[in-house]
Image 1: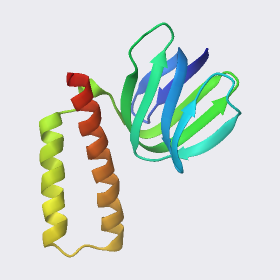
Image 2 (image 1 turned 45 degrees about the vertical axis):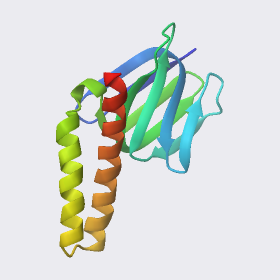
Image 3 (image 1 turned 90 degrees about the vertical axis):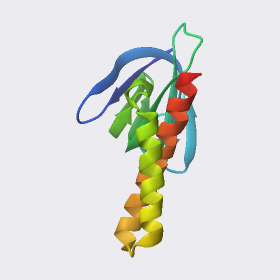
Length: 137
């Protein structure tokens, strides 16, 4: 077992909770972290983060948007720009935002910087839809 801490500038999601495994959307792809993992520091992409609390059957999830992951012998520390838990996600509002923003991009001239931002926001919206849909099951 090892400990997981997830924080954002606005809130603490978990602090020192014992977990069996953690999966994060790392910069180069999904990273699965188990006890005994080699120490590392990596950047995180926008996507779905998963973890299994000690003694629980169900896997917990959150949508994170960019950040850092530090793995040490003691555990995993996540510093995310944004983190959304399933119960905080408004599924219908997220679907409406995604549809509206996709229309906006098709009908307007946008800069390269705006395009990058739209891609990041779409990734977050799609991850939120995935997490919220799974939570309803």
